Length: 229
Image 1 (tube, rainbow, N blue to C red):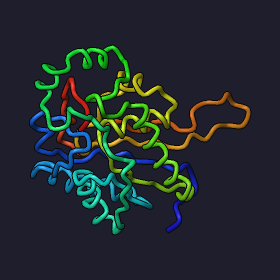
Image 2 (image 1 turned 180 degrees about the vertical axis):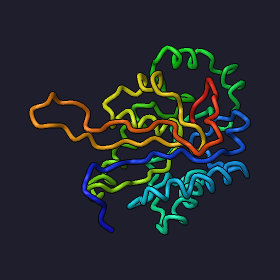
Image 3 (image 1 turned 90 degrees about the horizontal axis):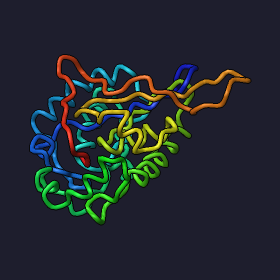
């Protein structure tokens, strides 16, 4: 398949809802399944995203992302490639705990995060900068094989997708966390190559075309105070 001439695009899709999402449980690398609502979200988003005629579908290997990717790929008539570098941020000891438990057990770390400090989640987990580096490496490999004008669908997670978008847009990850609200379940962002005019000032190589887009009428849920989903 050869894409039409024009900028290449990455669609960054967050997985559908899981029971852990609904219960306010930090997931990280915990391999949670989609809830019935999450499966329905993926089913409804699938034809909308398949209509963009993606050239390739690449997913985190965690099942909540993989199942979401499979719903779109089925409609698009494509296989799903998995890449563990698209996994959610590792939240260490917070994985499986509710937001209330984490606030009780590790309030000081959450306060640091609220001040914009990129702390290692759950003591033994990752920083957002580390997530940005690994997701960007995965995206760069996809882009290297993507024809002019083609679209790649990357199915990932809330923090991971935002960290990747920040890297592509030239933003510091924790600044992006303040500027860009987290993607809702089965919502997406679109990032396109920026075609700079010769002689124009240098700028980011990519531009943001969409953020937190989804299928109407379901709005993106507003959930404060947690990530790692």
